[in-house]
Image (cartoon, rainbow, N blue to C red; front, top):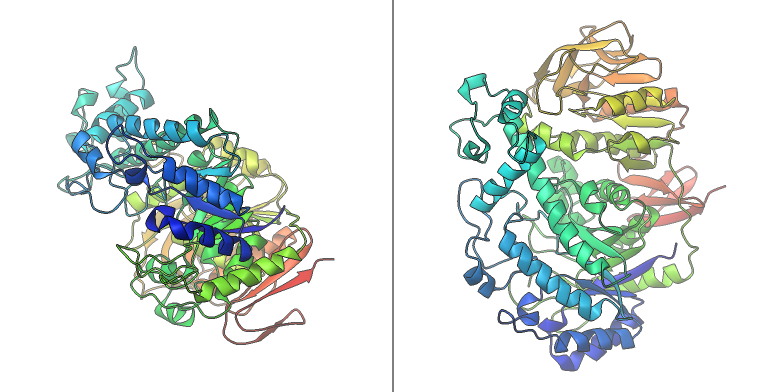
Amino acid sequence: MKRTLGTCYYPEHWPREIWQEDARRMAEAGLTWVRIGEFAWSRLEPVAGEYDFDWLDDAIAVLGAAGLKVVLGTPTATPPRWMIDRHPDMLAVDADGRPRKFGSRRHYCFSHEGYKGECARIVTRLAERYGRNPHVAAWQTDNEFGCHDTTYSYSDAARDAFRGWLRSRYPGQGNDGDIDALNAAWGNIFWSMDYGDFDQIDLPNLTVTEPNPSHVLDFRRFSSDQVVAFNRLQSEIIRAHSDAPIAHNYMGRITDFDHYDVGADLDIASWDSYPLGFLEDRVPATVAQQQTYARQGDPDFQAFHHDLYRAVGRGRWWVMEQQPGPVNWAPYNPAPLPGMVRLWSWEAFAHGAEAVCYFRWRQAPMAQEQMHAGLLRPDSVDAAGIKEARQVAEELAGAPEVSPSQPDIALIFDYDAEWAWAIQPHGAGLSYFELVFDTYRALRRLGLSVDILPARPDVLDGYKLIVAPGLMHMTEALKAALNDSGTTVLIGPRSGARDATMRTPVPLPPAMPGLDVTVSYVESLRPDLPIGLQGGGAIRSYRDVLETSAEILVRTEAGEAALVAQGQILYSAGWFDPSAMMRVMRLACLRAGIDTMDLPGGVRCRDTGTERFWFNYDTETHVVAGMTLDPVSVTRAHRA
């Protein structure tokens, strides 16, 4: 697989006279890809029904003439102002019942049929015009689905669509649905919440106290399906006119919709990587960690998403936007240390990225993102990031092509479980994402490469260890596949704690074949009252109290089971602090026959088929495995 670089460009922001010079400089910097068009609807259709594609024709021709390949974005994330006049009810509504106003971006409701029709129209025009253009080598649908809390809408359009979705989910005779089946599934006898008809069902907001969790989970599933359908609409139109691959650019820690489902209609998964912004805004990190890595980013957060989106893209994935300097949107926005843009780029390639594209080519002198650095300053002088981008391009020219390899370890991440934990966290701040991320961090600290997988029975082959923490709902097919896999499996805590309709199942969880474990009760813990473990470390935040005849591998200081094993299945009865998490992962790897290392705090490695990449996020030198790793550096070694 060839590794390439690119950038994000907005020709509509700049005078026509400088396009050719920009294209020449991009090519000279070693860039291959240029993404354009994803925010340009008001320039493509300044008045409803009146189109202006001449400027876009020209921009694509200029870029193509310089030897650059275009990623053409559909502009549906930024409907123009006249669209609101045409469809005043297309705006999303937040959970407090307030419309999301015009004046920034993503101001639409996924359920609004009129707006979806407008999107189909503009995407059709683009696909017909550019589908066979030799310079348009890839497509991007919309931009950052779900960003700015825009997946969930509580509009009338969403309410009506939700009722139709429920009728299909709880079918009866004809198209009416079975309201009794819904009442039974949701447990609506509780608090006299029974419905007599689907048209009585509202959206789960503005209730006196918390709404029915089954109602909320179905609403979240419905909302995810709306994103999937919105993306599918565009993908199918593009495919009818173009053979070029189609991508979407996901974001970091946006979990409101199922990315695997969206990815099923795409050829490439891409994501937008902003390590410094995410550290302050989205990474579960202590203040000390934020201070240590303020100018480097978290050593595991980008890698986690690289591995996640490799799964979403079924092996094909890009970084569509890579931070090259300070951003504008986090609580604090420092500049990266020298060497970090290069490190982030190579880390993506080590995890299998086909392309890394820097956002953006030139820093904007106007509007919301004028404090967001680019490869060039607003006066077109080189910014710091482009020097490292050029270095990466030179290094890529002499580097061997990537030979992928399947690692020994699979970690399951499930969006449905994320929603279930969010609906019933059982303790302040408890999050499925953070539980899985803590697990991933521990595995990486042990020097291990990881595949992230969806919770599907058909993707589990070939691993020595499968780790599946916190899967609130486990299908019987998944349980059987894990039990029959012949490999070491670590599940828990909270595995199988709810059925598909968010009810507590009987037999009590986890009800795993081949594992004599019953969770008799659960408790969430105050941050200042962890439960110590014999041998060191502690359970923090959450634990399952077990009835079991399985072998106890780790006990609490009071002698209760914290980690048990029966055959190849292990059950973790708590959310462990970092030292205990490392200990438990090391034990699981030992049982699976996997060698581990103990890496320094900011050092990580990643294996490909032929190379081992070492990444040192720290500002000090480390000696690991006989190798000297310079501060803030990438080191490549041949694998025997």
